[in-house]
Length: 385
Image (cartoon, rainbow, N blue to C red):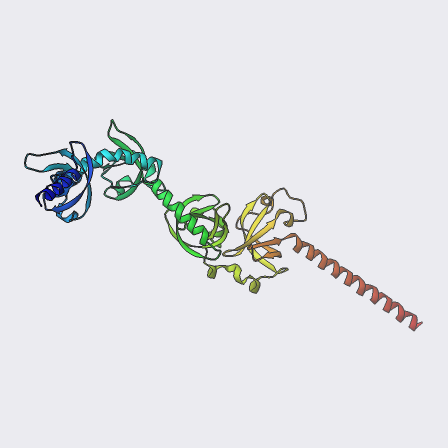
């Protein structure tokens, strides 16, 4: 019995790890109190991690660690003279973090950090004992003007580059956001159909329209789709950062382009055009814009059309401004209505031609009546004779 017991103890002793200073090993939490965590590292003696060697910031170990938790530690001292091994979680992480940085740069490994302060050009943090810097251009997908607003914020970041000698690393939150956005974008494109309604954020303005993030992909609201009224620039209607409700009007999955409309269909004056305007109607409008090719005439709010330069006068003119001016009221003939594309075309020249034709008809009628009258009078004379 004694021999078998000795053999059993020998096996246990052989299975015990012989650890030395600097070794990194995974252990199991035995217990935790306010001052330290007791860890089984598979050695002849248990290890102790003091509160100072646990985290970079003050914590109560008993609130964060419980029996059975796995913890990676570095051996500070193999024997403290009291039958314990001194361990450090912080130092183990510091040694490993450089490999983690390589993995992050080459792959998808990310880190959670808290922004500590704002300095010129970006914000600072600390990651596993390494000083971290996030450039302002890498904080978000869009330009960040107020760096101070990020102080105290928790961010998920990736490593961009590091310097071990200087104990520093450059991080990016934008890279993580871009990857997540790309994944969302793929899912979004698969489900996008015309007519869907989304709430998005205006991310950029251009002369031709506004770009809106609808949850993983940017769509374009062309300037003509921002308002039923004619506007000079998208900033007349929206600003970067605005939350807007949009409708999908076109999806090109191959080129990954999304066309959007901001307008509320119920407010679209073109929806009931046929009830108010027909081709060949003579209407009065106001000149609201002059271009080299013609003038735009507004009939009412949201409804205007083109008076082409060739339709302004019977006489040849070089530009509309030779005859018309902004704000001038003009009478025009509707010569074309395209409700689907919300376009209308006018003519002033046609009205003049109609008036001339009417006058010619009048003259013909007068001449005809005069001729008949003369013939009747001649017949009377002959009868009298």
